[in-house]
Length: 389
Image 1: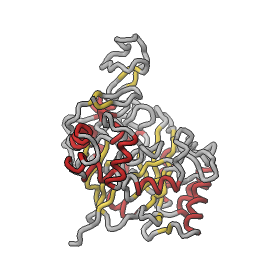
Image 2: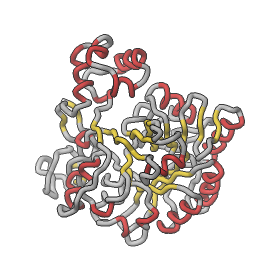
Image 3: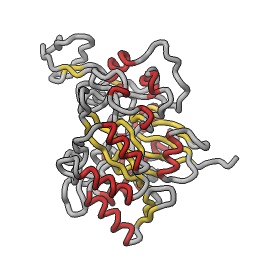
């Protein structure tokens, strides 16, 4: 049997500004332009496939069309856009929905194979959102109608960062099942998001046959590739990714990569004022605030079925982004990138002795230990990242 190639994939990257300077994702960095993302994702991060999650914005669509006209990119067989530097872009859209009788709002990810399909979805969306030019707009439409429209256009439908407390479908602490919000048969995957991983989530019985994906939700260039996956596919395309999600024809996710959940912003139930981990307290024992955010860890304990037989899934590899490594500053990071080519090589390939040729021994040791989960971590919560001690 032919051995299929493997690709590094991050499918949740935001556009901060269009080429003309207009905002798309208001909270994202202005440096997140289409061509900056395409260049940085390949040259610095070492990714093979990226998902631009604001591709419904009319100016973004026009920029993509202009790239095709200038022969800077081409639409590929099977869906997706291949750029000259070898990176493939999948067209995505992040939306905010507020289903009836549910404690929303929730975020969802949709992906489409071609610019034509995305244009059709954008036109449809424009009648249901306040501003079609902006990212993550609230859609004034029923969730099942949105799902049916995505499927009509041969798209993929994935709940975004499903377990985070504010915009995740499970994270509100009210919904116990996806079926309260969505048609389960039309869900193609679940995005894990910060503060969760496969081991924590694998006890939810209704997700037994749904693939988990790990994406960065990047709001700056540096955050691209913070989470990603390695996928076995025949070629980098929309159709091949869809096959991998559904584990068909030998295509499948090999590994998920991401933060140790304890480094995430919402791992433990914590006080929003002083960030004390409060456990089951409803009032912070430290500052007496009642502003408490339930942690993903505690929420997943509520959702997990102790009698559910966990399914075999791709391993989730905990890694610590280079920016989290103590005393590894921007100048040192630039030296590493210049020496090893890109961050995938630094994180996955460079040996301890090779790293010592570029950085001091403590930093080299920390990078190696980050691969095996041996660094000590203080857990995050209530919007504050955890940190490496």
